[in-house]
Amino acid sequence: MTATPAVLLRGAVAMPQVGIGVFLVDDADAERVVRTAIDAGYRSVDTAAAYQNERGVGRAVAACGVPRGDLFVTTKIWNTEHGFSATTRAARESLDRLGLDYVDLLLVHWPVPEQDRYVPTWQALLHLREAGLARAVGVSNFQPEHITRLLEATGEPPAVNQVELHPLFTQDPLRRFGAATGIVTEAWHPLAPGTGLLTDPVVARIAVKHGRSAAQVVLRWHVQQGHVVIPKSTRPERIRENIDVYGFALDVADMADLDGLNQGKRLGPDPATFFLP
Ligand code: NDP
Image (cartoon, rainbow, N blue to C red; front, side, top):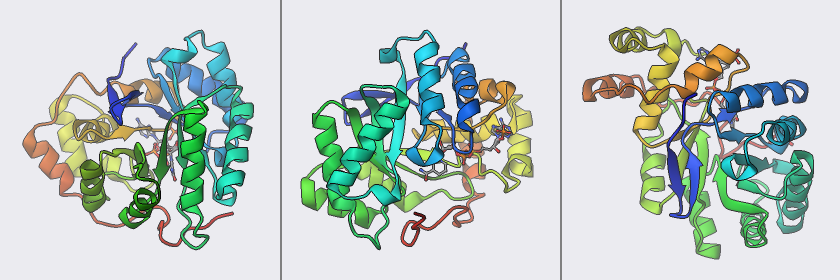
């Protein structure tokens, strides 16, 4: 079993640096996937109301035998639930589906600027944290201008910003903004699925050099920079492979070569315009 170090959210809440993501995992399969991950040493799982698998995640948490206090569960408020009262209700519904009294991290999934309701949504998250329903609160897919508005309205920065981030899209300005504001950056699409990154010759050469897989090299690039990562796999051997990234280190040249793959282009939607109901 492989353990994973933790990062501290706002100096208070320890979050495992590697977790299992369950986007596109059926509810019926989520229990198996999360239990496989927990057996492999994972203690963190990233779900969302929109993934429609919170019940399966909850079944795994209930049945796995690991004390609730040793697990870290993240879920997210979907785009149609922005605004103070809708967000408060949606969070309680997520907890019901998960079968939990609290989540460890509650995120706003997307800012949806065209609705312009992410400030009251954020105020609801702060209220839910005060009520003990979330240990930490944060955002996902927020740009600096969105976070600045949260700060102006409440004085409270998010603990985490979960964003698309991988060697093909390194998000340097956003990561600098996060570091300056005390926000932990969490990477989604950490392996840049569907791009060929894992067969790129640069990644392959570094993988051979360290006797590791391409996925482990990419995940090591993340953790060495302090990102939280939540790679998704439904395959037991890959689930185990993806958390086993602490037994080697990339050197300065490896990191620079991987940084050099940046194309500055998103694979996923643009947070400035994305609104999927
Ligand atoms: P990932 O970067 O985790 O890539 C997942 C893909 O890579 C799957 O097709 C998986 O296939 C494959 N894969 C996983 N491990 C390996 C490996 N070791 N070798 C080769 N292929 C591998 O992308 P995701 O989009 O799933 O992102 C991760 C998580 O981030 C999501 O599950 C979700 O929790 C979160 N997320 C959040 C978003 C947001 O807006 N906040 C948006 C998108 C994702 P297989 O399953 O067959 O192994």
